[in-house]
Image (cartoon, rainbow over all chains, first blue to last red; front, side, top):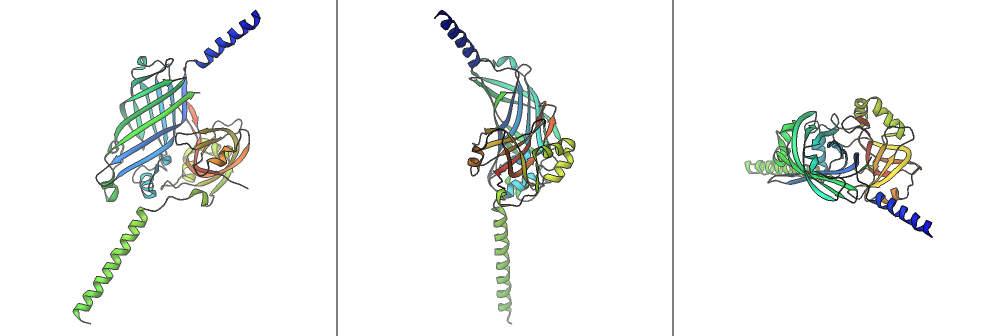
Length: 188
Length: 158
């Protein structure tokens, strides 16, 4: 009987540890969601992409994102064609947008404790082979061992050589678009 | 022909021209997306070969498989099911990856085809048809191999 109690205690302790195993090390997702929104007086345009690959290292605060550009889906096929074409994002030659950077205030995040943490991330964003430094705010949520990252920021397309000089796109696409990102990470 | 008649004819011709131009613009503007599953397969190959092609020469891979319009090549890829997961748009994602390969082929299904993916089990060999979005490759910042991405997938029955 004593042996059974002992066994139960050990397994209970083990289970408790397994359930509350702190998330640490390199976290990965291959199914992050990124969308953008463009508003002009003429029309609103939204595109969604569910194939974002990202890593987040809890010890160093390093973060990286890779966005397959052809995975952006638009309501209208003509918009999608414009987006991909040589004149705009040229996705055949530059199929991926990338970001690599660091959480500036890593000490503010406790990956072992459930909670919502405000972070600031600085790094380099590369779109269409043009790299620019950016710093944006985001939110990291830790809940039951799952780490989620969210951010929303504005992007000036002209900074990355994406310009619309003539025709419909020049009047219907905003010069500055709103980018929203949502990623659920898992241990590698 | 009187002057008035000539004007009438010209006006009719112009009106028809404007109507035709407007309908072409409207058609182009509202043109539906390509239906990947009813379109022809451009390339048939194994997941291993596709990954290997990209790892050997990513630029050549992009030239061969990607299209400027975003309507890239339609591929029928055969491989071993490594995992099945669900994305944030409630679409099933089947990873085809054979033992020993550094990367796989990540196939995203759709609301219309999810049911077919649900029947798959890990370890099974299957052929999946879909549109390629990007190739495989090692990324130094991520420090991992990225998979080939296929979307609008469905299982191709022999």
